[in-house]
Image 1 (tube, rainbow, N blue to C red):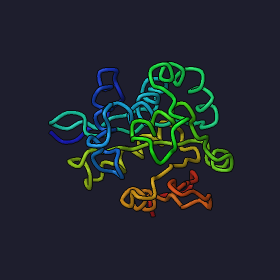
Image 2 (cartoon, one colour):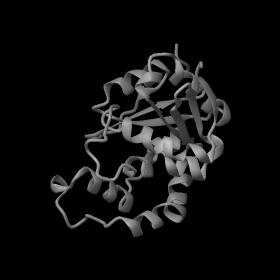
Image 3 (cartoon, rainbow, N blue to C red):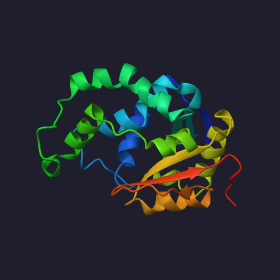
Image 4 (spheres, rainbow, N blue to C red):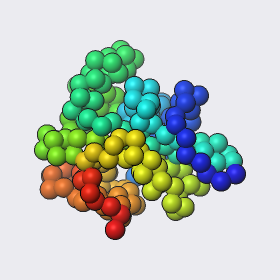
Amino acid sequence: MAERIRSFQPTDVEAGYAISLATGFEGGDASHLYRDPKMMGHIYFAPYALLEPALAFVVEDGDGVAGFVVGTADTAAWEDRLEREWWPSLRSRYADPCTMPAEARTPDERRAFMIHHPTPTPVTVAKAYPAHLHINLLPRAQGRGVGSKLLDTWLARADTRSVHVGVNRANKGAAVFWAARGFEVLPIPGERMLWMGRAPSSGAG
């Protein structure tokens, strides 16, 4: 079965969580790091898929769901919405590790801290590139042009507004992927996060 891209369905939730974990360590498998396998998906997949399903798509092959793209057209409004509709229930489930030194926190605790204290997108990024998205692909779907198709599908649905992504600096493959598709590194300082943006007229070259 060739890969096909389709709209997200509620039955895809568990697959999305699994893919988030399988691609959550610098683009590779993070299952050895987390006691709670849903921590990554709580932040980078589920809120988008469940609260903004019109901008959520999956790629499916003969073995099932192999990747997804999720995002939002208005980052500032999205972060406000998460405060109202997503973080409160998770904050009641996970303790805030704020009293623990950052260097002593486990991966689960680092994600719990993000849930309690999400870092807002830099204002200059959100203003110039209001939309943002996440693409996650299992290894079997990588290097086949699937990521580009997911990006094009998402941009068409989001009406190709200026868009940005946040990339872990250690994930070199992701930075190369986005750069090849017209995303430019933005001059925003950050130890771990690389911000990249693409205007509507930009393309993959």
